[in-house]
Structure formats: C-alpha cells, structure tokens
Figure (cartoon, rainbow, N blue to C red):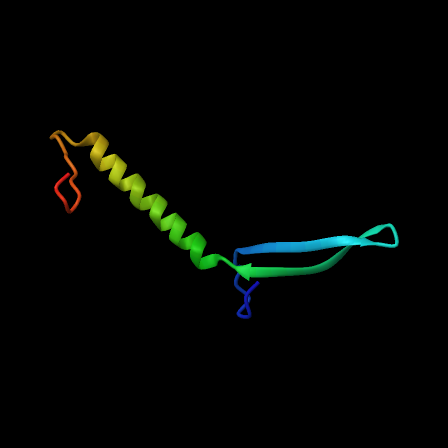
Length: 69
C-alpha cells in the first residue's frame, strides 16, 4: 500500500537460509512495479486495437521499416 493509502503492485524477492536446522528468512526486498504494470496494460490495449484494425480492414495493409524492407 502506498503512503496515500492506494494499492500498488509489488515484486518481492526473499532470501532464506537455515539456522539450527530450521529454515529462516534472511532478508527481503519489495519494489513498486505499478508503473510497469500500467505500461504493460497500455501496450496490450494498443496491440489489441492494432490487431482489430488490421484483421478487419477491407483493404490490403503493408508495413515497411525505414529501409523500405
């Protein structure tokens, strides 16, 4: 949860080990990946829109890179 109370997406990494025959957590890190998740969702929507236009176009569509290939 962010300082303002809003929910955020986090990625966690936890390191564990053994002490006296018992598994223990040695350390952990959590990082905010909210912006990455938003960017991934925006890309997914953009690709979905592009695919819908491409698949339903009544005319032929050709794509070329800057070299004309």
